[in-house]
Image (cartoon, rainbow over all chains, first blue to last red; front, side, top):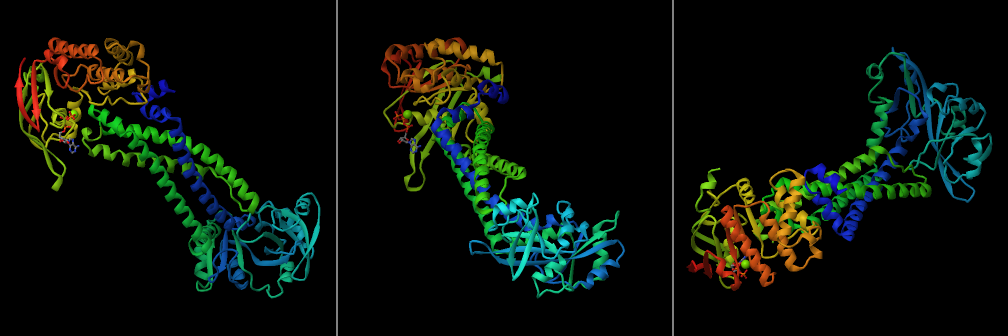
Amino acid sequence: MNAVLTWLFGRLPIGWLQLSHSRTRLFAAVAGVAFANLLVFMQLGIMGALNSSTVAPYSLLNADIILSSQEGNTLTDSGNIARAYMFQALGVPGVAAGTPLYIGNLPLSVADGSSISLLSFGLDVTQTGFVAASIAPEMGRLAIENAVLLDKDTRGMPADALASLATGGRFTFEANGKTLNAVGSMAVGGGFLADGMMVTSDQSFLRFFPSRNSGAPDQILLRVADGIAPDVVVERLRAVLPPENVKVQTVAKARAADLAFMATERPTGIIFGFGVFMGILVGLVIVYQVLSTDVADHLREYATFKAMGYDQPFFLGIVFEEALILAVLGFVPGLIVSIGLYTALNAVTGLPVAMVASRAVLVFVGTLVACSASGAIATRRLAAADPADLF
Amino acid sequence: MADNQITHPIKVQGLNHFFGTGEARKQAIWDLNLTIKRGSLTILMGPSGSGKTTVLTLMGCLRNVQEGRVGLLGHELHGASEAQLVQLRRRLGFIFQAHNLHESLTATQNVLMALQVHGRGNAAKQQVAARHILGLLGLADRADYLPQNLSGGQKQRVAIARALVSNPEVIFADEPTAALDKESGRVVVEMLKKLGQARGTTTVMVTHDNRIMDLADRIITLEEGRVVQDTAP
Ligand SMILES: Nc1ncnc2c1ncn2[C@@H]1O[C@H](COP(=O)(O)OP(=O)(O)OP(=O)(O)O)[C@@H](O)[C@H]1O
Ligand SMILES: [Mg+2]
């Protein structure tokens, strides 16, 4: 280790020698950095779960453009839009197909007496091109009255019955005075929006929600003709449809807008965003404490080096070396414990909390930068003082 | 380098130094004038608090000069830039009142630090030089020990080896023999004196040790920040 580092730095690996000199202090420093990592990972994980449950319903759809009511907030929190706009849109050059999407929250009581809600999509079962490939083959079965596809992770449903759906099992349950027939399952991975999701035919949907009418769906899905950019068609649609009533967006834009809305205009999003902010802040304070304590502990020794003719870049080199070592040694346990806690949280709450590579890289780079900056700030005292005052 | 022709590496004129600010401001050095010849061994004496360490650190680029002139190796220290100070410090050897070794480096590694400050260099040669000087100071069998496993006297000798290894032009020593027994204390000072005669190394040393006064070329006594006696035994 020493020989490698000596060759690498062209000097003795003082940062490493210093850190490894006292095992207990090294352990405390690494634990501090690991804890800072854990804190940030947990906050980002919860924020990430909110984001993925916001966009999870999009994973069931396959469309290019979405028409919504101007009163709506997100895909699943929308006002109604007149179906007539779909026919108008179909007349616009470049629009190849369209279908209405009905959305509702269906409350039901489950075995243990508690009540849950199912986020329900009602779709024309013949329009299989508008749903994700994973459920397109199942759409035909929904033509039967009151048949539904259920999210396999729905909370409150008998787990073995849900599991049996994938292997041809069937079961029925009551909601809103109707008997629903679960004929298949799907994986959505929702979480914050509802206890589970179901997809059914537009006909069944209107039976489950008697107050809704077929002329006023929640969203209108459009597909563009091959070889034409959705953005171009969006512009054409905006020119035709009344902007005060109809919001025209590509699906990608709608997804992004939903994420922004949930993060900035809903209490959960704001609270979780604040949690991320606090996590990063506390993490920074911990990392700064670790590095500045280390520099303070070695100030006398650094002052001696300064007296021998070492300059500020040399000391920065030492603290960057320490920053790198602590960032790596702290990141590994921080990451492992975080993945463990993500798994536990997911098992307990059913929220889609999971580690993603980009988040891990982001947190590592952030830790490295925070460690380096903290060390650099801590060495400023050394730069300002006369060596004789530090002995 | 033209500096080799310098006959007086240290020239101090009208040096005043103050500690503290406002009410607590206190003058520690009063109008000090001093010129020290190349290759000489000068001893600074005086009671505790008389300003010996202060003068030594002012001349050795370890403290900013506030008032007066301090010429070191042909460079004025008053108002010198940090970069100039860094360059000058590399030409000095300092032995501190406290040994000030780096706790996580072995004796040899501590000595190597004084060589590596001059650049990457030849690692094998540096090792040889570091172990050689430790050997001269009787530490051959302690070369790979950490400071925590050395006695006070051994640590002090490592610090001396570190100050001498890079052949400094001026050596400042603050009670270098305090932690040593009579025998090894004298050996160290004799080494410094021989360096002066052989290479023209100038040494300024603070000491209370009466047993080594006979080795000095010049003895300066300070009291309350002023020179009260200046003799050549
Ligand atoms: N950093 C400082 N801040 C304030 N006063 C100081 C400081 N360093 C030294 N002094 C004061 O300056 C005066 C000279 O101190 P100095 O350390 O130079 O004495 P010294 O001769 O080396 O003493 P000793 O033999 O005890 O080492 C003393 O009165 C001391 O209290
Ligand atoms: Mg002193």
